Image (cartoon, rainbow over all chains, first blue to last red; front, side, top):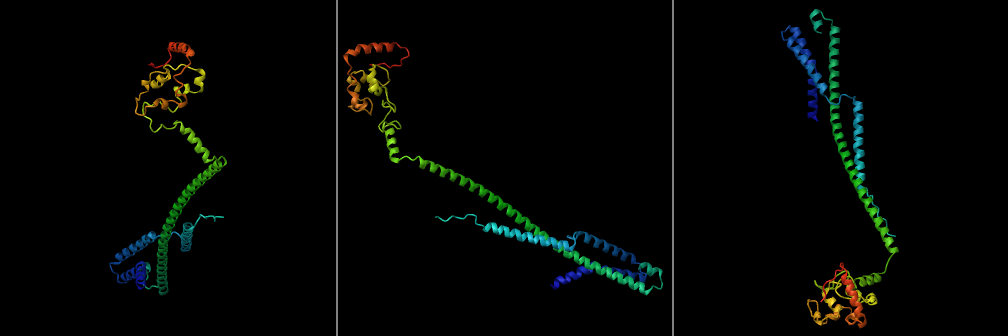
Length: 99
Length: 224
């Protein structure tokens, strides 16, 4: 649980653009020559974020629709399991009692 | 912000703060949306697993369907054949014949050796599964017609005996023959009558034989 939380925080920090913006502002204040590098870094970061978003699966539908689809699939699996169980345990042959 | 920083020597504090707040807010929103996206990715993976499960269940159901269809076909065939057999049984019961009668009839058919050769039959035995010439002549029809018996059939011993020839013809020539073959070969009640022909008919018989002999289509064998 702690490991998952740490991983989540790291991912959040990766997405954040604030540190880069902060570095840019510092360079401006110092009138440093590295400002162009910092700007390039920001552009690269934004580009990476765009690529990461485009590769994310499942974001073509809204979260609500996705949850509906998930529920529907779970329902299908349950129904089909029940059907298979019913057919396998079904005894179709009723031996008539000798009269 | 860059423009503000370069162009304005005395930045307006309020504007800077506003911009920074906006920046932080946007960053926060970005973080949240990225988190939602990741969650949707996890849900999408779960959905893929569930879809695979559904496909597997579908193939299981199709397999079961095929097997049930096959079983139904087999059972339908078996039931149909059973019904046909029951009909045959009912039909046989309606036209039933007693086993005693069947056995009696079978015995009658097989008694004349018509279905199987006698146990002691060997090649050369004149006995046949059908009435032979000799037997026909010794029967009622033969006596009525009183036909001559010279060389009509191919059984030499029979011909010789029919013509009332030498007794040496009767000597055993085949393993199945015994010394009293004259009695065994012919029906007992006709065995002695064969050589005895009314004297008065001899000439007539010879004439008939001559007439028959002149027929080129006759297939008689030489008689002794």
